Image (cartoon, rainbow over all chains, first blue to last red; front, side):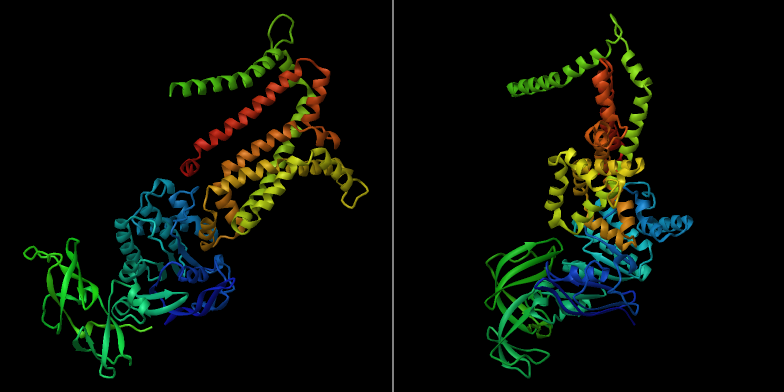
Length: 350
Length: 262
């Protein structure tokens, strides 16, 4: 059941169209991420949902009601900002209570809700502190509590983790997802960090140049990218230029080695194909029918994973292998073989 | 290194002498009313003068009205200009500087011409109307100081994000200004308020030409008719101004969130 509908949304600043014919349906309780590079229009879409920008065209419906004509303070939307945006003159408890005071709720209800929210974010004892007395992660959790305290219909998260250090970012994204699941609140999350989007979302909208290039689950977006941009933007990708032998049967050859893809390929002499690092195996392996010669160019030891860069079929290829104490990584400059399966090949369109 | 320090101290001491010696001289002179010995007679005489009390209270009341008017006028304006009309800032700043280049006598004659008893808005027809007109005039005189103080305060906070955060929580413009913006620029507003107070307390031209019983004309009158009392009054006015400065410092120090922003 669709709860939030964005249809034919457009936004122009002067002659610059930053959002173009954007459509999206979000179910109640769903966590959707808008993922894309800087300037792709993701924040503009979020700000139009919040009411901070007026669409040039299109509709935004929340629970069946068109909200385009409503002011931000009339939309019952909670928002968390990258810069925390806690009111510096108010304590943590007063910040959380702010929206409820604006609504004119009774004092007892406000107090009980503040306690509930501070418990929810795991900061029950910090109600009397001022924002400057908190760490970045704590401030962002308070900002989340403040946004949730007014029981919004939709929660908007505008790159809330970008200002935090890496470790806090990982733990806080799990906390945010856990809280969102517990409350069942419909959420739109804007990020340029693919790892955040992949790990947190029910669905991801990959945006580029103001349009949604692909909408899908993290699994779909990662494994079956719809366009070349999505394939390149989400995850690391090894691209090859292959020769089409038989387009309808999906037969191609890579560096003289033939393989048959599960689906037909576009007609024409050449086709761009891609493989994720984990789809390329160092050495031969069962179930990987295509074997190609390789020369090791670089080895990055990253602990549990070793990322090897090798030259394969004229291209520089990244491949990941798990660390094993009894098997040291290959030497740089040595010859090796890599194996892959035609099932894992991504045909790049667009 | 040592030479630099020497010249720093030398400059500081020279400045101190330049400012403090005349004050000491004035204070010393204000104590000489009783022949042959120091006393506070000049101060007692001033404080017991009913005209002093009346004019001082009148100017204090008007300065409070001016401060309120200034805050009501300038905080929303400076906020709106920063938030929605950043390109208009140079124009607004120019307008706020006009009172420094247009003499008060020009402004007050303009007022008298525009708002006299035969005009469509006869402010000068009644004492209360003239008081209102004088308050408007004082607000104009204080505009450069008040606007700059508030604008500097606004620069220190991210008003765009705070505004959006408040809006997303259901707040309207009045709530945002009253409960989010104003408390966060309170120290700046107080600085502007104390400067306004200092201007209004000593202002002469407008109040004299509008014939209001303000403290400025009283200062001039007493200066022309008495010997020691003007010095006592000057010392007292100076003390009030310094007390105001001290209050700004105190408020800044005890305001937790302001300390954090600094």
